[in-house]
Length: 152
Image 1 (tube, helix red, strand yellow):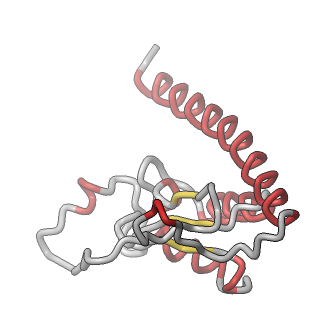
Image 2 (cartoon, rainbow, N blue to C red):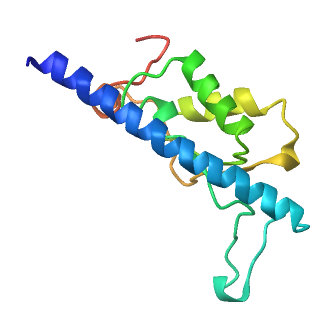
């Protein structure tokens, strides 16, 4: 088995396993959201006595943005938007991302999808404190081999 064939096999296997796991989790998240809504939950954030005042999102399941920032392999815009839309349709309303994911690519993709949604319907979490600056000595091709940039 040559390396390309093995790599393709592993990639396809990983995608299949991820989709199988995500399908189960999305169904559980949607059921939990329905149950919470039936119980009179408003979906608002809460802090509880045992959380030491920390923010507790109103959702138990979040969709991460790393893969949609092309961190593991190239994901087309079409596939990224289809993924986010499928998650939205399954009831996912909590999204986690950072400027570091694809050097902003994940944030742009989520932003393009969510900008027409009612802001009170979803929660975003992100990381702050990392300033991304252009540099002639940047190693972004080394650190982000799958990142697609218009000038690349």
